[in-house]
Length: 353
Image 1 (cartoon, rainbow, N blue to C red):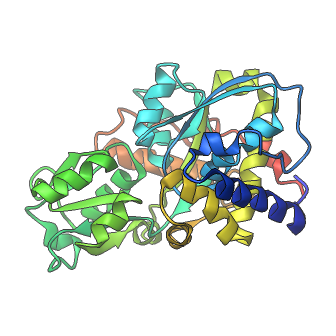
Image 2 (image 1 turned 90 degrees about the vertical axis):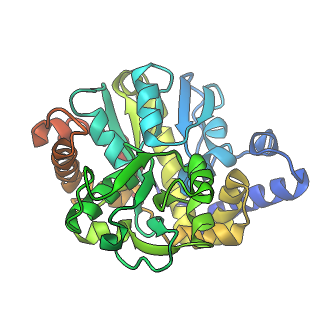
């Protein structure tokens, strides 16, 4: 995709700002109705029906949703957005044919591409590389390390990137999930209640739950540290192979839209935070703080050797090996199987400057 001039990015941001100001407390879908603009040439030939699964994670996907970019860029497509609480839920939606495209995270994506699930899908984009945005918070402020959690109960959404990071952190600290700690499966929206009732002693989660827990607890470690230890995690997007094959044009425009949103976050985070704030129901200032917990990659960067152009398949293969050791998957495919689970054609087009 040709790099957007700053004026085009600013114009789109102004549209979002004005729409929000004029709508007061209107929902995002109401706020963008009739006000959305496409940041590049719209494609009226695309008539796809797309069911998109999204999550409340501060990245470009929420900008694309809030500003109605897909709807403006593909005015004859039928697009529906459904909110999910975790990547594991989205993978189940792929398996039950109730979603075509959505945010799943690197660990859920690995499980989807491995036995026994073997879901016919592909990873199509990296919304972000996760750092401090996913962290382990302990309720007892005297807890200073993973080892201090021995004998405690830890909550995490199973099959999520946070779950993968937690299991690696526990293993590196020499703690056995069968006898040293109790790990329970809770979605982020259920963690707060369990925390307040004393059901859990710690949780590895993401915002907005993470910020709420920080007010009472202490940060023990995070996904930035586990990445440095050799276990990186991503908020990836996946799409069913059937949908990709039937709608390559939709995938091209969707990817260009995501690339636009990433450029907006990186180059004008204040404007980007406005859209994300509407979706999350928090202030733009708080969104800007959350942005610092992630790394946002352009299509050009994602097409390089570190990601779709090379290393990403190896990272997924490595994740599969770990998940197999933990009993999360029944078998690990060879690295080529995970290379085949990547779809980079639209990224290559969007990344051509």
